[in-house]
Length: 84
Image (cartoon, rainbow, N blue to C red):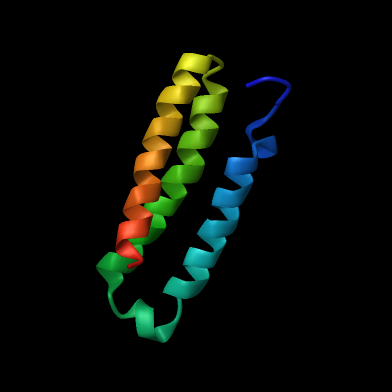
């Protein structure tokens, strides 16, 4: 966590935020929006990525941050598989 003072400065968090915005945009379209369960799952998984990066950083230790990044990576996989 060298020289980063807040999670909002982490590049992966910024990218995850942009992807989450795109996911909300895409899942709001009529063609996608009819499957409410899938829409909810993809949205929640994308938010999980953001949340886990932030929570891990706020824990204040490299070990905890790594642990939460691993969880965020799992959520990335969930988003990818549901967008195929």
